[in-house]
Image 1 (cartoon, one colour):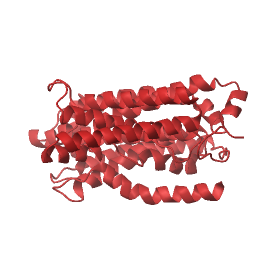
Image 2: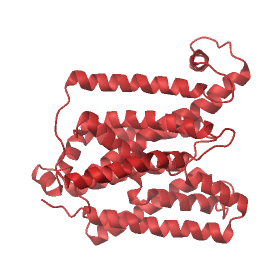
Image 3: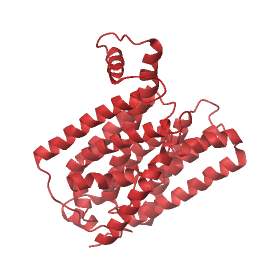
Image 4: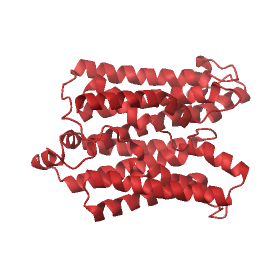
Length: 354
């Protein structure tokens, strides 16, 4: 059965994971995430312990008073904690988006950026930073978000005009990606000075430096809403994994469901990219790792994928900011170094099952 996808998988593994194992995965993953956040916040030039982290967090949440100095409290609460939490949110969101895109497009190599969202965000960012659009009233994140939405709107328009099949969606995303990448390069080459070029390039490769609680709150809210929507469509995603014809035969409104899920993943990706830049390979590799633990049922797969993505990016960001201290490595560089070997493994796995 063919739905016109570019790289279609065979019908997915439908093995079931028992409720005790499922509960163990979720509970263990959540505890590991909390421990990872607590430990990651302690890593850096300033000597901070896990009890210090708990004390600072409890104090700011109204559970007693902290005995930490204002400087140490500020390092924990204003610098490291927002960054670490945003890393967790971005990792979870990108992994969830990758899971949905791979099932929706029946393409094991799909990721959150297949819709051209990251390229559009890059263009929006450089337009604000380099060209000064908005006169200082528009932030880099806002410009990136608007650019991401414009790119996705173009993909929707092109795919609808060309027939709305999965391969048309992918090809429309490739076209938008190339267009906005070219626009970004043109603006940088013709208008940016050396300092602006370096700053823009660092952001384009993914950076969580300088983030605050506003970004954490916004991205967390968007992730929560989008995750609920995706979980509500879990059975539909299971049907899509077998192809559009099979989904339609099961009573799924294919066109409406595709639009809802594409818009959901695009909105989440746009929010994450506007705050942290383009962090690649998380949404490509983590869904495959999670499927190895849970099977392909999305009601089980989506929460485990979110936890795996969050834990992964917390530690990747910790490595990125400390491995060459005091110099910081863009997060996207580290995820690429880790993700490329995993990507190659996925390619071999796809070839062996095709």
